[in-house]
Length: 131
Image (cartoon, rainbow, N blue to C red):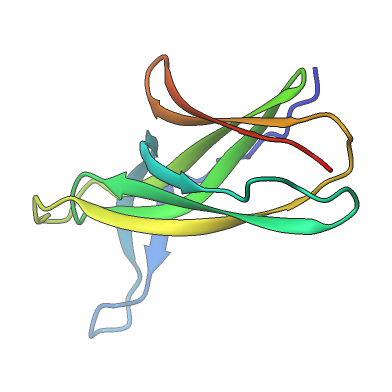
């Protein structure tokens, strides 16, 4: 099984936002956040690149988009959205939506099956045929 690993190795972020110019240490952690919706083409054209637009939801203002984890599982791909969470900030409690685009070059003739993580054990499945 092929797997693309996203290496998350940071525990502290250094920031130079203080007026004195000293670096402040901000504690943070990483979490998967749910995908709300996916806008994918009806089909991919073999050899061409297409875009998939992914909308995700962050539970409050302490969350910020970090990256996504793209994992090959046989013929399917599991996609998980990763947020960085500021552990020390005062957060607004409003849900914040954002989006990112995945560029997919159709290199196989078989259908592409994407599983977008929504919650533990729950996925939004998108199947795109190749012509």
